[in-house]
Length: 85
Length: 68
Image (cartoon, rainbow over all chains, first blue to last red):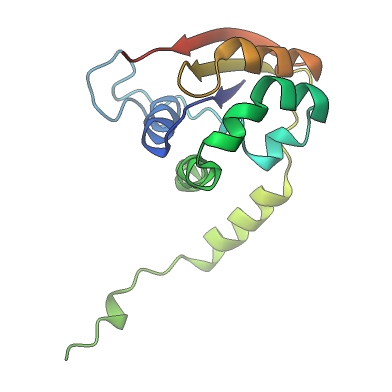
C-alpha cells in the first residue's frame, strides 16, 4: 500500500504525509495518534514521475508541474519519509 | 562570541547509511494498492488515478480535497 499526494503547497503536503505515517499532527481527526507508517510520495517526485509515460504525465500533470514549487514539495514529503526511518 | 558549533545535531552513522540504502530502492507502483489524495488547487485525484492505472497500480482510494 502506497500513498500518493497531489498537494499544491509544502505545508499541506507535509500535513498529509504526517497523517498517513505518524498520525494526524493536529490531533483532531480519526487518525490522531494512529501511526499507519505508510510509504508516502508526491506525484511530482522524480522517483514516481519516472515510472509514467512522459506523454500521459504531461497531459495530466504537466501544467501544475510548471506552476507549483516542486523542490519545496519534494523536500517536505522527503523529510517525513526520512524521519520514519 | 559564543561558539555554537557544538550544539549542531549530527545524524548517527547507521542512520545515514540507512537513508542511502533507502534512496537506492525505487518505489515501483506496479501491482500495488495506491491511496490517492489529490487536491483541487494542486493535482486532482483523477489525474493521478489515470497515471497509476497506466503503470499497473490499483487505486484503492481516490480523493480530491477542496479548500474554499
